[in-house]
Image (tube, rainbow, N blue to C red; front, side, top):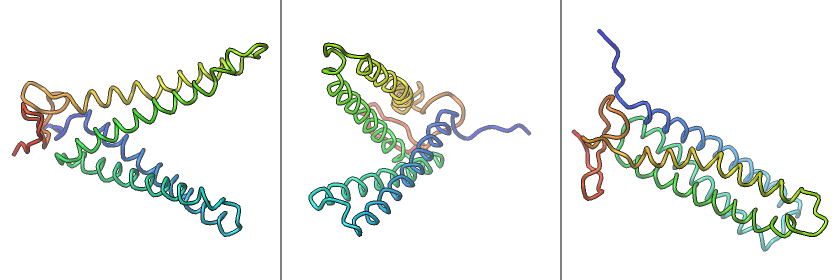
Amino acid sequence: MTFQEKRPTSVTVIAWIWMIVGGVTLLSGAWFAVLFYAFSDFGAVAVPTSGLFALVVVGQLGIAVLALVAGINFLKLKAWSRDALEGLTWLFLVLLLGFTGVQLVMWLPVMFAAGSTGVGALTGVFSLFLATAYGVPLVLMLRTLRSTNSDGRLGDNEGDFAATRAPGGTVQELR
């Protein structure tokens, strides 16, 4: 009797990546929530920014829970989790590009200022390096999530995936 994997390796890898990202994001969001409430008790948090910070923490916790739940269900080959992870991948890619753009806009005046010491240029190059280092895996993940085989399954030809994309782009169950 030989062992045969039930799902493609790409499904397992993507699911575990999103479960780890979701777990770390959940811990980070919980830590920020604790810090926010600890500092607000001492009056260290400005009142106008407190609502915005609370909204960011709630959003971060929501995204973390979605990433965890979708990653777990992607391992279970649930059809909806594929679309959820694709949406999260797009969100992270847009946030990465936005962050990189803001970093470059902030540092461009420093990069080209007279008498610049090179710190601005180094920061600009480092921002582009980080965008590439995080962006390439996100693009590869997105490509894998959006791709199907000739028979409509995700990834390679190992095993069955619970969801397949119909010609119109809708998701349907295999069995």
